[in-house]
Length: 72
Image (cartoon, rainbow, N blue to C red; front, side, top):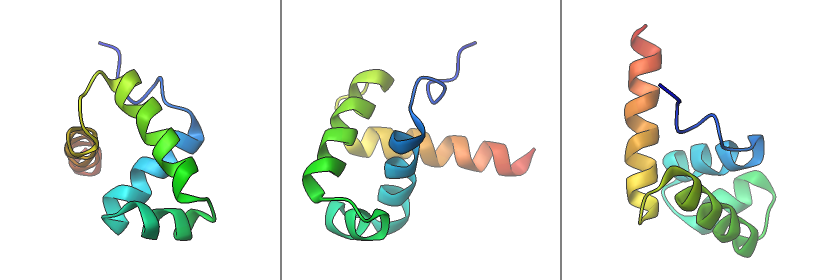
């Protein structure tokens, strides 16, 4: 089974991680030294690649995946 995160670039994975940790675009952008516009662009690409309709869905999948990989 193909992992949905395999198709994400390193930058997209970093943005998803930052959104998971920071909870909002502005804080995530600051922590990554990116503009909020760039973060929103990455999030749009992430949603498209993951086949989800919202950033929340992407973050939930990320959180579940993170929990699963830390248990193994």
